[in-house]
Image (cartoon, rainbow, N blue to C red; front, side, top):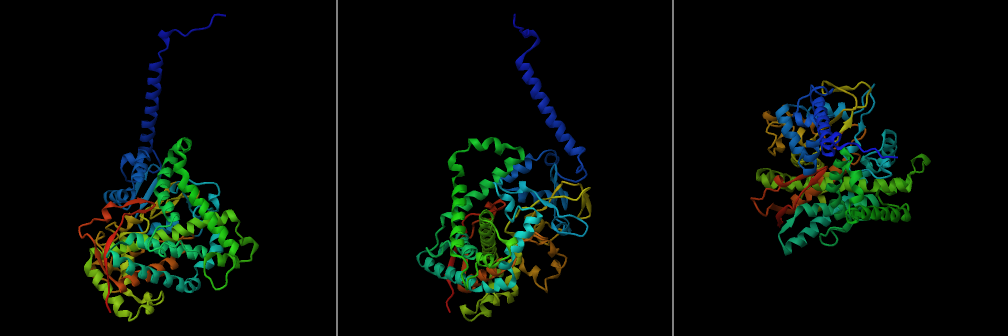
Length: 506
């Protein structure tokens, strides 16, 4: 049989590849044109390239500048902006309840899993990612550890670590008056959260201010996880994962291994009378339906540590920076705190709740430097779509309020880029009377609002009051622009904040 040979004059491989490339390029261009002009979201304002393809969003996210860019887009296009072919960003306070709330006659909008790091097996039992039924179950189980009564019972633990921070700082500044307050706040909040979660501190403060390897592992994984998550939008992570060196996955494996060890040690100790860690509350629950399996405990343990520590340390670092940059504000809050307490022992979680100006300082810090600057998107889940901030949004659209953008958007706040705690006082100056205070929701809203909000407030108020009462402080380098170097990877990737501290003499 004579084999058939296709005549070369009828087939040019290079020409065929060129045709395929041209067809692929044409498809991509047509897809972009369709997204810009014929998509259900076409009527919403925004840059055309962002509306055509998600690539600009992904690139800015990987660069760590997405929250800043979204603010720029709001300034240009208004309170609702199309930031991807299927995603809208809002600054209107109404958006909180519309996007994240639970309203009569409407199902809860689902979380968008692509907003988080790549999800491993078991992710659906994590309180952050769980479906509505599992989330409600987990919240019911963990809830007793976060009630007002429980937070009051944890006062002794909060005071213990606040005092240890002060003691170790006083020892450290004998050797060097300039200290990295970003690190010291991390040492404190991770120690405290480890004790709160497992009854076992990470001993960062005990060792005179040293990062525990578990803490460093978490830091290393946050920005890497976000970058990997962005690749999932184009399924590139699935293709590239086999090519990653084993060393790239080692921090994640070490983190999982140590988390499991922490949980196993705490379970082995069992119920411990007169302790207030989370597991003591879990072990008191005898309802069979509320018994968590070991894998469920492992899956949620890391969330307890990260959510309970990194966000508080971030806020306190930002607060310290803005106080140093605004000496008039610093003097006023120093006067309030130091006049209120004659002795260190008088500074308790309950007593600091009366510090009107200090609380305004913290509120303003959460506005100008929220613990997370991102928007956590929800997928519009009601059949046929729903109304968001006065406009109809189709089903399956991603919607979010970016904290940084909403809080720095001028129609929401007068002089939005300035640090002005007075705007939060009952007798705020007239120019701030039209500020939309209800847009500030750093702990989110709705059924998935932060479970640890009360504990976080108690912690940040006490730690700040202790630092202000015990120390005078200023930037080690008055010209340093710490804020401009920030990157945002779900949480802030912040650098060292070098502060010169002097003990207050009494």
